[in-house]
Image 1 (cartoon, one colour):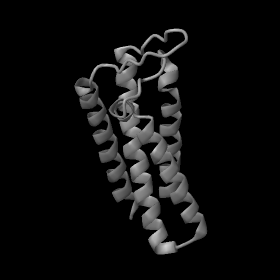
Image 2 (cartoon, rainbow, N blue to C red; image 1 turned 90 degrees about the horizontal axis):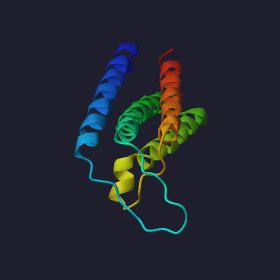
Image 3 (cartoon, rainbow, N blue to C red; image 1 turned 180 degrees about the vertical axis):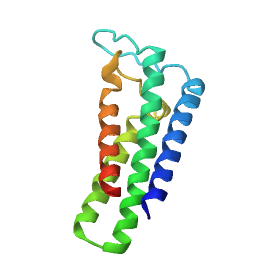
Image 4 (spheres, helix red, strand yellow; image 1 turned 45 degrees about the vertical axis):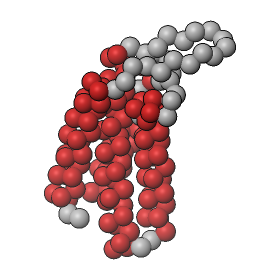
Length: 138
């Protein structure tokens, strides 16, 4: 893949991730409540969940772009280092999918805790994916 194709792919993935996150934030079901012993935890605000959804979907699409790039590199180079990058990217992708509130709610689990700590790890995941994409096209 050439640099221009990669930049277009990443741009499309960013737009798709953001759009899907916005759509998902309007269509998601209400919070799932579980009776559990211990202190009550205040559910996250709607804004926090919307931010989490957008960042989560952007991460899924960015990391998917990265996986496509690394698989393309592996087809031409076939090095063990590239296999390692593919494995790391798959691990990041699994993290991004399982941290998505829609997936958590679909599996019957509540979204945990209020506040920015719900989405701060996802911001750093997006940053890491962006750096890896930048380094991959250099």
